[in-house]
Length: 179
Length: 179
DNA sequence: ATATCTGCAAAAAGTTTGCGTTATG
DNA sequence: CATAACGCAAACTTTTTGCAGATAT
Image (tube, rainbow over all chains, first blue to last red; front, side, top):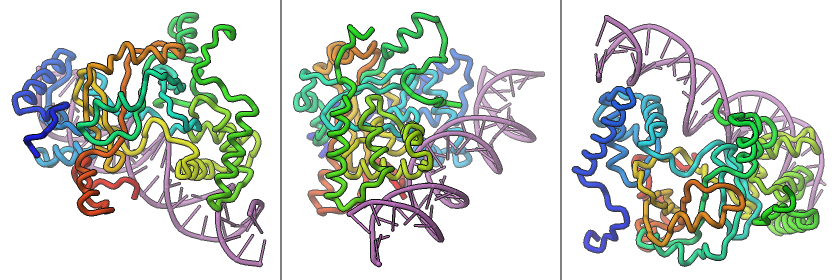
């Protein structure tokens, strides 16, 4: 199994992990954040993984080294890492479930400002050819392209009245993003 | 504003909505499901939308016609529609937040069986050219390609012992998907 | 030394479930 | 008329927050 291991994105070696942890510590200190055992372990856990763990999984892993760590510290640290752009959040679990009545193959444009999700299609985004690149990892049934940016309405809003955050074309009715 | 409206995926007309609702009723009856006012309204709301509403938004919209409808009926109906493959769930809020320490531009292969998320890269998936197709909808800052399929481990597992669902390579530690 | 971070516990937000009643087929 | 679906309320999960005490700089 090891000999045919397709090296799409190889598991990071100990040196690579150490380098990432070091980069994290430097970045943290540069931002005036304290480097604690908990944070170092949480980041190291993430840096040494290739399977994009969730908070509970990181918690379980770090607990082996730091048995007294709490789940909320993991959450807090993960959010901090995202804010510091040292880690990204996958699967855009932005807010709530969103549903799509369009069953034809298509792709999505997600507005980073209002959360609006709009469909688009493009013949050039042929599923078979796009999927090829992921084949070493497994079968490919469907390929979805998510383009993140600012929707036209939000761009218009910002252009008109500089930094107003009142108009939110994406979501009808008064919905809140985070508190 | 209306004259330059790029028709990527146009808002469905009344006839198209009626067609979708009819298709839904037929499919529901075919599956032995009852067609209630609530279900028809919920589906119609979804079918007439282009912005991928969430449960709360559907609830608010349907409430105008059916003031006594409850939020859990909306949730139940939406899940039913997903199960019947009449609607899809966007933004894969399937489980929990997942984090990614890899800050290089890359894409994801998501296993439909175990949920494992693996990275892959491909020069052909050039961000600039891929984003072009979504330009009519707004700016494009980042493009992410999500390939859904079965990861190698799951394919192996199924091949070995037909339909076993015990081995879940994607998530370490005993995690539950939905109870 | 002190301001930040941690751990505990409780709250908040979103979604699901149990149960008695309503209404579809 | 039998049975599926509804509405209500309460449970459950995941994530966030307030506060007293520990710790990095």
